[in-house]
Amino acid sequence: MIEDNLPKGTQIAYIPTHAEGDINHPDVEFGFIVRQAQDGDYFCRYWNKRYPDELRTKSNWEKTPKGNLLLYASHPKTVIDGTIFKYNI
Image 1 (cartoon, rainbow, N blue to C red):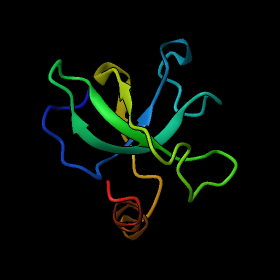
Image 2 (cartoon, helix red, strand yellow):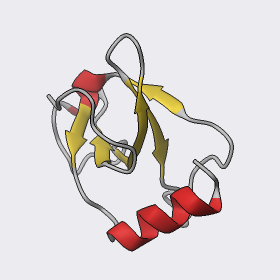
Image 3 (tube, one colour):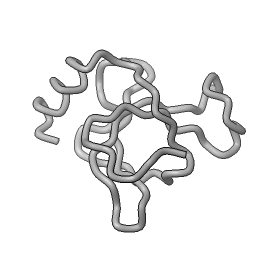
């Protein structure tokens, strides 16, 4: 499990429960943290699987259970920083 209070831009992998911890499962999503929710979960943004340097959604954060997140860097920090700036996240 990941820790609390991770900063915006921290890269993560969302591993759905049915993937049983398999980082290579086709339903795993890669993205980054926007902020932590009051209940301890995280609001995240995820990359589009078809266009890996584009966000899956351009206007929404997705609340994700903290227990399903793993620290995982899938993109260079410059891409994360540029995306945060581009979409004013």
